[in-house]
Image (cartoon, rainbow, N blue to C red; front, side, top):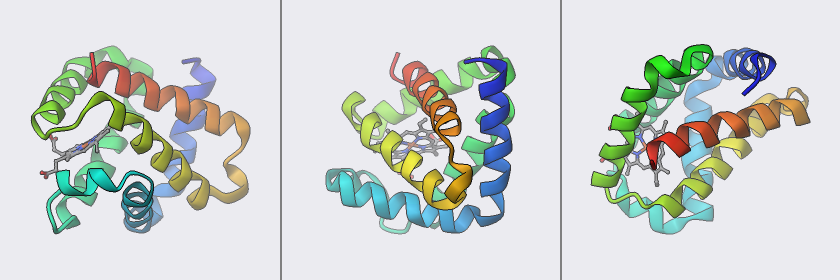
Length: 131
Ligand code: HEM
């Protein structure tokens, strides 16, 4: 990831933060639409899950410029996901749902450069989590 991409991800995430709850709703609805089998992995009540996901994303985004410092935590997060029954192939629909959510939340600010920067971010995180 280039420093410009890190900045694009950070500034675009700031724009989504005020609507974090809506973004989380959009994300899970979209995920369960495109990958229904993932629904059973999550608890019935997603309230806590939504807060955790947005806060983890926030931490990752804030530390993107020093990704090496959060690598151990991201690796552990990946190991826990294996324990939740998450398989490597499920990272693709989750990434797609995330990009779709950002597109909804950002509208015209979701430029091709912003999309590329988020794709690089998600792939980096997913790559470490599944390693
Ligand atoms: C970059 C990718 C991802 C991030 C940042 C992320 C983040 C998180 C966080 C922070 C938690 C809270 C629990 C913990 O810390 O262990 C969690 C739980 C969970 N995640 Fe993810 N996740 C990612 C990818 C995925 C994928 C690909 C799936 C597949 C469907 C998934 C399914 C789950 C499930 C099932 C739980 C546990 C729910 C529960 O029982 O409470 N996650 N995730």
